[in-house]
Amino acid sequence: MLMQSCLTVLFEEPFWVGLYERRCNGCYEICKITFGTEPKESEIYNFLLENWPRLHFAQTQESNAVISKLQNPKRMQREISKQLQAKSISTKAQQALQQNASKIKLFVKPSTAKLRKLNRNAGLCCAKPRKKPSIGVNNSPHI
Image 1 (cartoon, rainbow, N blue to C red):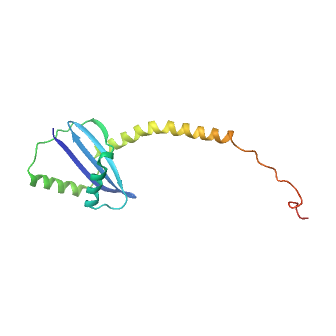
Image 2 (tube, helix red, strand yellow):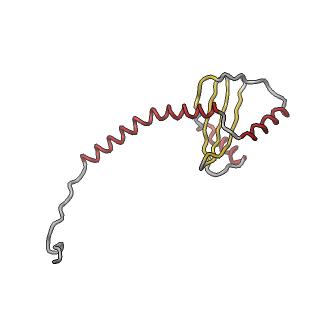
Image 3 (cartoon, rainbow, N blue to C red):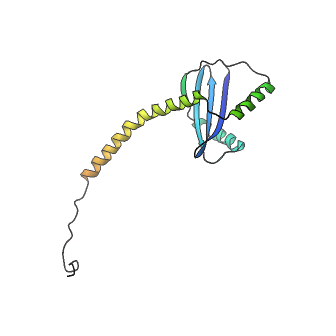
């Protein structure tokens, strides 16, 4: 079992975002992590250690890419430096995030509409009638 993972940190207006991609047994998974300010390497490392069980990975269709065999460490370092220079999100990662967002939207939208309707109906049945202002000694208009 060979597992490949990649964490890309980039700036998406107004926050810094981390995209954690992993491939294992032909399965491609992605997780989007939102950071506030620009994170340091140590902060990212600590975040992953503390929050690893809570990260939600969106699974997509099986990856067509074949995971290559182990590489020479120097060659791997060169490829990593080339990837750091590119600084772009892979289209596969973008598609996976969009599919995950659309799935969530399908579940959330009907439930929020029902809640809104229930709140509207609850507010109408419990509304108190308004009092008419009484004209009395203290409230009489000055002429």
